[in-house]
Length: 226
Length: 54
Length: 245
Image (cartoon, rainbow over all chains, first blue to last red; front, side, top):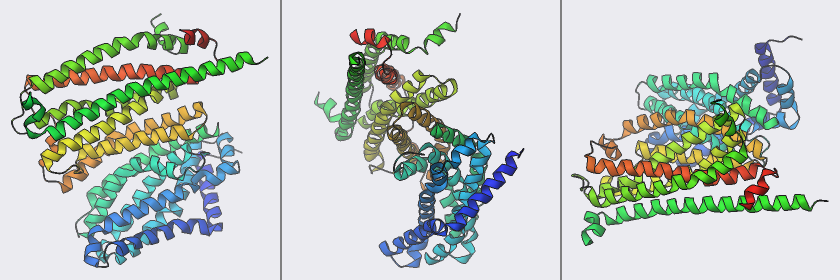
């Protein structure tokens, strides 16, 4: 059976999506977490929309970041447990492509829904309707980069007991540029200014991430499986 | 001499900075030597356990 | 034939003996340079026009900051060498670097903050360089946490090596992001900690301190390296003679 790397990747992507849809509970968790965290801020600061609008960008981004991190643990865990990951590594297919497929599935299941849900949270924080594209686009891109970087940390911590916090500790410093530019983009949008510049920088990071991160993550998977 | 210690009024920033940095210098020396000592003790123990095996 | 010395570097007993012999050659010059730098910086150098005697913190802050970065790069380079050429020694070097670099990052943060207080008015101001140092500290801590989380030394070596390489690629990205972030929100009074045009009497002690600390790093690294080699060599036969010494 001579499957090309791209075809194998597509198969893995479809498989991961199908499996996730069966375990719907698992993929709703990050969204629920996001909703709860964004509620914490008005509760702890003030219900005044004017004040909330000032910090809305930061709140949305930190909540999205933490929610994505929460979901990262599941990226490789199940496949590592039942030996599927080992099969991928031994299959002779390009592990880089397979890891990229898994990471894309993860983003489609976590990042994209977050990006689509964030506008609702934004409105609750006083964000004007015109700014909504400035929430969706940057968060979609930002969570993509986060999934890519997070795949590396997730692969490195495979098999480490209770790796949740370690995973966060490893990923967050690397994710700070994403936070800086993403939150800046959203903030500019909220103020009514053009957010093209930080968006382009985020896209550049996404391109860099897509090209390099799966390679590193695949190498890390191999290390963890040894 | 007093002038020196006084550091033109900045004494409470300058001297703690130097004190901290040199504490870290000393700590590095101490930790490194302790780490080596521990590694040597462990290695000796491993070797003696190995030679104790019949 | 020129490659024999390189091949010998892959031999643990050789490196162990070499490290033992070389340590004093780094340690004593380091002490001399640091003492000379201290004298020059605290006593000989004239007070700064704007900052008075407060600027003398630079003689401990700049070396600490330099160490924090230089050690990280050394760690990442030896990690890469360990990954590419599968040299245990390279991994041992990387492992030895981390605690040294992390401690000097803390020193850089605290001295930078103490320097900031009289200059900016607050102990912490999210200025780009200190913020980058803080993120660097997180990178070091993550590296050390990953190492201690994995029980098998070989796997820990390789995993943390990958992390170090990914980290070092990110360091410039992080630095420029933070610089840009800061420039959006800060008045341009930011670069106070930058080294302005310095007269020789001020600059020379600084160079002495930088050189002295670098040699100090080499000496401490060599001591730690010996321990790391021993840990990786389990029960190899050369250990008996080496430990008897």
